[in-house]
Figure 1 (cartoon, one colour):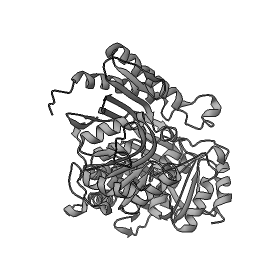
Figure 2 (cartoon, chains in turn green, orange; figure 1 turned 90 degrees about the horizontal axis):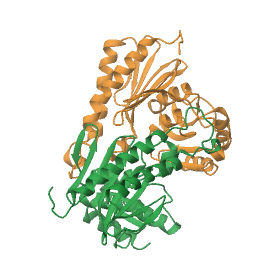
Figure 3 (cartoon, chains in turn yellow, purple; figure 1 turned 45 degrees about the vertical axis):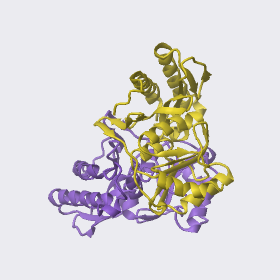
Figure 4 (tube, chains in turn green, red; figure 1 turned 180 degrees about the horizontal axis):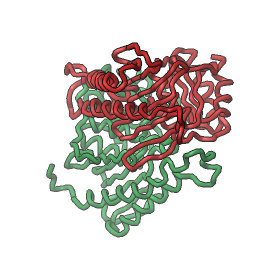
Amino acid sequence: MNNPSFDPDIRRVAHLLADAARAAILPHFRSAALGTENKLSQGYDPVTVADRAAERAMRDILAAERPDDAILGEEFGAQAGTSGLTWVLDPIDGTRGFVSGTPTWGVLIAVSNGTGPFFGIIDQPYIGERFEGSPEGALLTHARGQNPLRTRKTAELSQAVLFTTFPEVGSEAEGKGFHAVAGHTQLTRYGMDCYAYALLAAGQVDLVIEAGLQAYDIQAPIALVEAAGGVVTDWQGGRAHEGGRAIAAANAVIHAQALAILKDY
Amino acid sequence: MNNPSFDPDIRRVAHLLADAARAAILPHFRSAALGTENKLSQGYDPVTVADRAAERAMRDILAAERPDDAILGEEFGAQAGTSGLTWVLDPIDGTRGFVSGTPTWGVLIAVSNGTGPFFGIIDQPYIGERFEGSPEGALLTHARGQNPLRTRKTAELSQAVLFTTFPEVGSEAEGKGFHAVAGHTQLTRYGMDCYAYALLAAGQVDLVIEAGLQAYDIQAPIALVEAAGGVVTDWQGGRAHEGGRAIAAANAVIHAQALAILKDY
């Protein structure tokens, strides 16, 4: 777990960001309940308020702690830097899950250099789980302690568990590609948002396939899954960190089997 | 919150059952991870072990505390009683969620009399949430305290959030019926297992529609949702507590709108 090339200050600051995002978001989660009318009709949109407050809080910390790094955020766009490092932030990934009360959304924090993300956090504030991947490995921190994370060794697509967020997946062709793979798996499940990648890193599922992603949706999952032993690419086997279509797999064997189907779509 | 017709001993014992089920199940949740091969190939099936251990623990408590009541359990079947009350138990509802590591499964505990369930618990041990409905009302107990639960007042299907567990729903006709309703809603989501009913009771979503249910799948959700102000029926508007097809709605208005579509399937 020692890698001299990994600057521990990145981890320190990343946890400050995740803590700040939790504090900004949690008061708004499930807040418009208890018999109120439709949330929007009250003029209060909890997910937008929480999203913006969390990204603002994270940017304030970066301004103080890492002023030379660039930032790419879902809410407030890109800010240039001079260090060669970019913090890639999605304060609430899975806003439809958030507005439905499901604890499947997450705070995504990645750090990338010229070649892609090498550090990533998926934080689920309501459950209180923080999944983290770095060159030193992957771990889960929760109220009861810490666990190392390691992807599964499933070697046959017919034994694999596949996740995506919604059955349409993306375009019609993307939906067909996903379901072509799904037809070969043991189990296909929906609705987990970014939490599906956390489950993949934790050795619970074998594949996550999505489309229509932004860079800030996928960079933290890439760093986490790779640190836990998995493989993440686009549907042609190339880099996925700019967004678009992504396949995350527990290992290279299952990745190759799914990609052999996906690449035709 | 005082209803002289509700025996507080039922609540006391129900919480003993839920506590025992938590203790029996949690050691097995996500246990076959960390790079092991396929769970079944190791000869250890965590969900079956946990399911049976939890129901055994709950039956042992009932034998000591409520020997005159009947029991209907998912794992060990029916046991007759003399009191007119039946404890209806599903130790792990959502086994596919359980084996995928998603915190969407739950321990279901209901108590019914000749007319149906009047007390119900949906317990999510990993998150640490216990949703409870009785003639005295509905509440959520979690690590940070307790909240009363109340369903939403959404009055238009076009503003409703609809949940079910998987997109096929059931038979081909049942799938068509579900998607006919889904086409009129604001948002349709999947993958929450029994947790969807908890979210409905908590005022987060408006509709849950399922098919192919057993009595032990739906009795606790019925008692919880009704206690929070919602309506649960079959797809023809009749009682749902024997299982089959169910629609749970946040209120009578949204229920009528969805039922007008569903009843043709």
